[in-house]
Length: 385
Ligand SMILES: *Cc1c(COP(=O)(O)O)cnc(C)c1O
Image 1 (cartoon, rainbow, N blue to C red):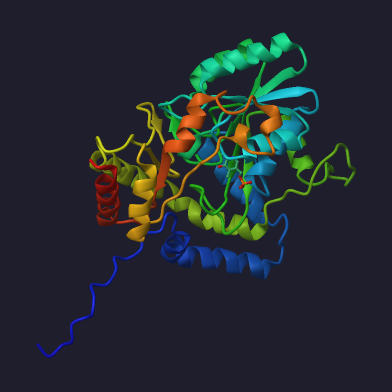
Image 2 (image 1 turned 90 degrees about the horizontal axis):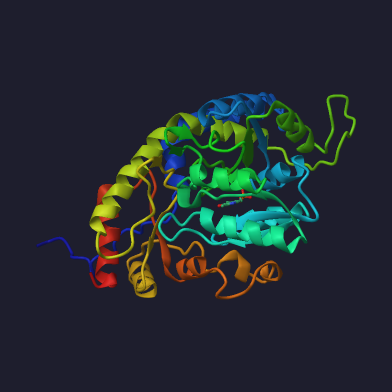
């Protein structure tokens, strides 16, 4: 042989947990054109892209009104403030979520009351919501006002079971759909599952911009008007500050990026759903599969398994250059900033157990079947299956 052999077999190509660059490469022509257009027009705040995006999103989400804003945390905070929720009020949140869900409650001045999640769906447990709401009512110190179910990893929370519990306790339902734009439950899109729904366009979410972004959906015209005013300092058309507000607009450039990505959103979701089904088959019996429901189409923001051998699996994946991460390694009630609002370790056992066992694997529309098989094989081997 005249050709020199490489000294060692090349390491397998890395498989990233998220791959925003691959999506950009695939949609480059549309994104670049939209962004160039917005740059040339010069309306960097409140450009025409904002209303266009809001119209498109409202249609997709099955909601009469969409209000774009700066990020998903502001979306939640604005939703709470717009309904007059603040000091002295209790807002029920799952303990197993990103800290922003509870953070928004605190930013509005209200008190987060942590509920446990269902071990299968990993979303808010309606029975625990009922218990916690009853407990708050009996103690008489706070007014129960709202519940924020979270569509964890892209799977809609159990809204049909949550709604009657919320009604019985007089709670408004605000859906935290930061991870589930594009998902459906009983054929109804996220955005039509609750009177108020908030989403995030952070780069790792199912519909992502090139930075921070968010939106609020609602079925109520007056609430929509308040929210529009509140994202611009509480001002009205005559620039009079009618109420308290914040500066929380979506940038025109981010709206341009999102408009360019919208046509691909459902195709990408369907591709991730196919790859998720492939993971489920390949990992059968090795780990607890990602949560799913027969009556839902998850947005598949993440493919999150659970295992007692998580650390061994993580080491094996790292050794093979396979991205992975733990969402979330600590339930919210055990974070220093939120300890005062919970009852400490042992109080929310399902959330605390999941924090020890969950592991998110790469799942993007740009992955190949072979890559999914490579990840699954590494997981199976390390799980001892
Ligand atoms: C990402 C996220 C948020 C916050 O969204 P940002 O746009 O990052 O502010 C809120 N809740 C959940 C469940 C999230 O995953």
